[in-house]
Amino acid sequence: MAYLKTIKVWARALRVGQWTKNLLIPAAWLFALGDPTQRAMAQGWRPVLLMLGMFASFCLVSSAFYLLNDVRDRESDRRHPIKRFRPVAVGLVSPREATIAAGFLFIVGIIPSLVMFLRHVDRWPMIAVVLVYSAMQLCYTGFLKRLPYVDVVVIAAGFVLRAVAGTMVLGVRLSPWLLACAFSLSLFLALCKRRHEKLLSEESRPALLGYHLPTLDMLIASSAMVTLSVYVAYTLVPSTVARYACGENLAFTAIPVGLGLVRYLYLTYARGDVGRPDKILLSDKVMWAILFLYAVSAAVVVVR
Image (cartoon, rainbow, N blue to C red; front, top):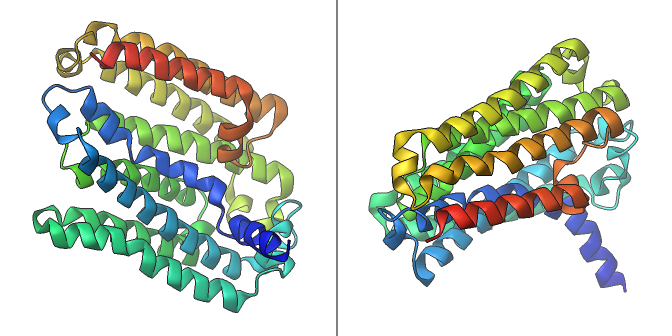
């Protein structure tokens, strides 16, 4: 029982639930499977193993920086109504233990991308994107998270790097429309989270004092509209239509995308339960139904 309790504590400290953010990495593999011009690069076990390696790298590296972030913010987290239960803030994990674990996770985390780089030197961007992500997270933990509005842009950029990582590991291309959509969607989620945090306890994070609720509301609405508009544009551009067997019907997949954005807006303003987007993704039944609808509609259109 003691071991089980320790595992649960460390799972919370590593924020294993937030590894769902890294599910954006296999997006390139899924889209490549539906693209006749790139399908050969995504078929077989080798691309799957490469994708799993990159996914593992990002999970371990991100957890390393979660630990460092918790060590740095443990005093302010203790004043937060929710974050005060984090293992480092509570004292279940000491700052020294968290720092050592962060170093270990970072070293182990870059091993998969390093091995892939050594086996395929021509794909040096594979490890470069992991190192760029790490440098960005280090700056975010150090000082960028204290700059209002800059912090959410950094978070959105992290999602774009995840999408890029998937393309680098397979050597495929991903539409710039989808990268722009990933950026605007992650910016939308980050802004919703900041609004929730400001209403909950703005003293817990220095950057929250610089946020203005009317401005946040305007940016949330704008980023939601941009996300839907960019995705619809992606489904209608001639290059996308020509790429898939039923490309002219790809625009129908924008319906669940719009429903998902509306559902998240409802959760933001009617229930205010958007402090952890990963929790919503894993627990909200309506969102699960919308994601299932998108998966089915995309499979019907993209997969021959």
